[in-house]
Length: 282
Image (tube, rainbow, N blue to C red; front, side, top):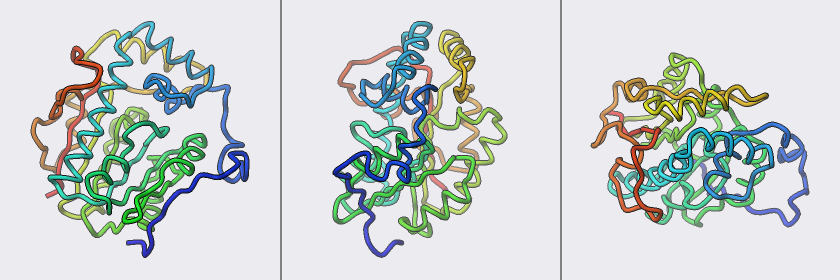
């Protein structure tokens, strides 16, 4: 465990040190999944190309906003459970996306102020915002790693500077494994990340599912765009395989709004095309 909390502080000038922070590498000409997601959630950190991509998806699949909202709401419920009833104090959140309301560290540290959270993403725009906004309680810690989920060795090595990976840790893979086109590779990444985490750790994961033909068609059209990273919806059965060898919590792998549901501020929705679950490492 790191000796001192790692706290990100906003710069007085966002352009200061832009090249080292990653700002100089932001490509506003190619849509990016984190920025599209931010747009669908009603955020403000996106470019015209991201808004256009989001509108194209929504034109084919109007339920995309419901997917974004309900999956985000599941994340909050999962973190509350893990930081509360499960007693987890360490979170490794990979593919965090752009900061919005109720980020992992905010939910966890409301439950337990000494929670330590490491975020991982590979988008320079996410890096800029994370450094400015992902601040911690004095008792806890937040840190940010610029890395790709395909490099689990680097992620675990860097996360160990803030987290004590000899203690139970929650691995959060929310909506990211669909960016790995080959399912066997995706399985291998999840298993490698979980392998070094001790007994009592948790895997929390959701991803888009192929149960709604309109959603599948929307993703097909999105994937055909120039420069985009393709996203692959999978069957609920394939998503369940990520939890092999772990003990699934009730209610298992279900559509995101059915995982220990609470009334949503925007009301209910039909079954959304995204499913996930939470499991404990024995």
